[in-house]
Every structure is written in C-alpha cells, then in structure tokens.
Image: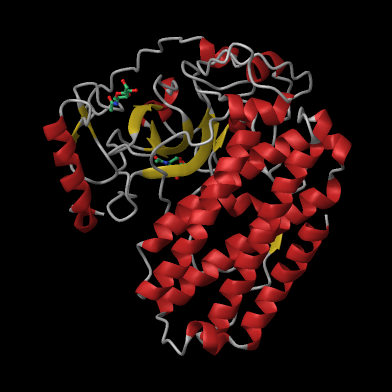
Length: 433
Ligand SMILES: *[C@@H]1O[C@H](CO)[C@@H](O)[C@H](O)[C@H]1NC(C)=O
Ligand SMILES: *[C@@H]1O[C@H](CO)[C@@H](O)[C@H](O)[C@H]1NC(C)=O
C-alpha cells in the first residue's frame, strides 16, 4: 500500500514537471498543423478515457466488482486504477507537448458515460471497446504524423494502450489475452464514429465523424450469429438488400464483405472486429491510407467475437482455471451474475444518448459464463457474394495469408523456404503500409 501510494504521487507530479519545462522535454520543434491536429485528437481521446475510468472507479465499490463475477475485487480495481493513471498521464503529457508547439490544448469537451456505467460488467465490456478504439486511433494516426520524433512519442503511448487492451481482454468473461497477431488501424473519422456517442456538447476537432453504427443483437454473439444493425444513416427508405456489412479483423488484407441482410459472423474469427456498412460489396482495405470511403454508409462499430477463452482470464473471474485445463472453449466457470457481450456493449455505446437506445445488460449467463457459444461451431457457411467484384471471404484457405495492406505472403508452415520469404516480405513492407 505504501508503495502504490508513493507511486501515484510520483505519477501525479510527473506532468507538472513537464509543464514546467516543456522545452527541455520536447525541444523547440516546429510542429506541422497536421501534427498539432493529431496530438489534439489524441489528447481528447485520452481525456475521454481518463474521464471514463475516473467516473467508473468513483461509482463502483468492491462489492460491485464481486457481483460482476470477479473472484477478487482487488485484482480488477488494481488494474482499472493503473489504466486510469496511464490515461490521465497521457493526456497531461500530450497537452504539455501541444503547449510546447505553441498550440492550445482542447479542454472544453464534455463526456457522458451514464449509459455504460450502469454496472461493472457493462463498464468492463465498454472499457475493452474503448481501449481497442484507442489502439486503432494511435495506429491510424501514426500514418498522419509528419515529425518522426512525434511518431516515436505517440508509439510509446500506443504500446501501453495495447497493454491495457490485453488486461481488459483477460478481465472479460471469455476473452483471450492476445486474440490476434495484428491490430486494426482506424482513421480519425472512424474513431469518432465509435467514440462520438460519449461526447456531450460541442467538441470541435475539425474532423467529420463517420455516421454511427450499432449492433442491435441482444444476447451472445459468436460464429453463426446473424447481426442486425441500426444507424442514423440507414432508414426505411434505403434498399438495404444492396448494402453490405464489412468485417475487418487484424491481419487480414481486406474486410470480409457479407450481404447486409445476411451478416453472419463467420468461423475462424477471434477478438476485435470492426464492422462497417457499405453500399457495395467491394471489401475495405485493411490500411487507413488506401481504405476507400466513397461507398461507406455507416460505421465502424466494434465487436469482440470471443471464440478462444483462456485459463488466465478464468483465474481473474473464478479464482481458478477451467478444471479441464483445455482452452478449447470448455471454460467451466460458474458466474451467476448477468453479463453482457461486448457486442451488446458496442450497441450500448453507439446508442448512448439516443432516444432509440434499446440494448440493456441482459442476462447471458449460460453462454458467456460457460463459453458454450464458443464450443458450438455453427458452420454458418459464409454466404457467397453475388455480383461482388471480388471473392475474398476471410482468412485464406489456400495456404497463403494476407497481412494488412501487404502483398499475399506464403504460409510460414508450408516450408522453411516460405518462412524466409515471409521475413523478407515483412522487411520490405514499410513502403506498402
Ligand atoms: C439512404 O436513404 C437516405 C434517405 O432517403 C438517403 O439520403 C441516402 O443517400 C441513402 N443511402 C444510400 C447509401 O443509398
Ligand atoms: C501453422 O501451424 C500451427 C500449428 O499446427 C497452426 O496452429 C497455425 O494455424 C498454422 N498457421 C497457418 C497460417 O496455417
């Protein structure tokens, strides 16, 4: 206790030191207008995150965490507190940097998290989405920065946001710590589509948000689940039979396009999925530079498809790992409280502040607690996309893999020669991304 108290004091003092002498830390660099915009955007996101965790920790007591299924409230509160301190430190440092550029930080934005601070399970599921958005925002923002030094600084925050994501994956009912070898980069407009509902009042960043999107399914979402959506950009006057849902996962070359009216979660997905709605079936490329926006209707929204629950997360939830020791979805924890799936949290996020908010923290005890959704493979047989100019439907089955915006690279399992070729593709990939 003594240790953590002094640590908090040290961290709290750190931004003040930087504010007092920004020139010593950042030098007198001439930041471009774009750099200032990216840092301002990053700071507002950090303010949002810090505010979210501060309000959550102020509202929920130890018993609330136990009620949400955590074996020990200390384990969860310790992590949420550490994350809150990081976010608040990030904001202070970004603001000091902006001041050193001669810019004024944007501190007038107000946030409202009432819709997701209803209970700890909803809060924790929302935190997981918030961190995925943070990771995506820094990844996408990296391509915009002009000054390599600022890129370095922003990247040092990005790696920490990714650690938060890992912790929150473990604290979720059936998440895996590191669900994918790759994350998903998001543009500022995409980030605002996800975070926008939490802004209350004006917050003029000078960036246009994509139309918001929410998943309206209640209950568990897994492979085989048909997703339904709502968005202010999709009304009864639209012919949605011509629309597509686009599922973007880390490491894929492009999104998986599925008919809007038959948007079934495919097998083979684990972890965060960014879902967009487009007016044609052309997949969206998995890089923020080349990703086409002309046919975008709404989104993204962020869902977590947890198909590989892990024993480490079960320790935090139940105090012991699954007795079978298997990680194949047979988690046998006995959480008896209501939980919500991250997809539900996504729905709650996107409908926050909206009169049409319908998602509630429904009880999905059996599925999310036992991982039964994950154990049942429903073989959704991804619908073919008639008339689509492409045939890409997800991770390659022909022995090749597509990684981000890079060219198709051989499956490293194929042979050692292929493995060498992967390494060289990786090394030469920077020009393509
Ligand atoms: C959906 O309908 C609205 C209202 O009629 C229209 O403005 C919009 O362009 C339509 N969206 C698409 C992608 O066709
Ligand atoms: C490579 O082999 C491992 C172990 O058999 C397997 O889990 C993994 O999915 C394979 N990777 C690819 C890309 O096929």
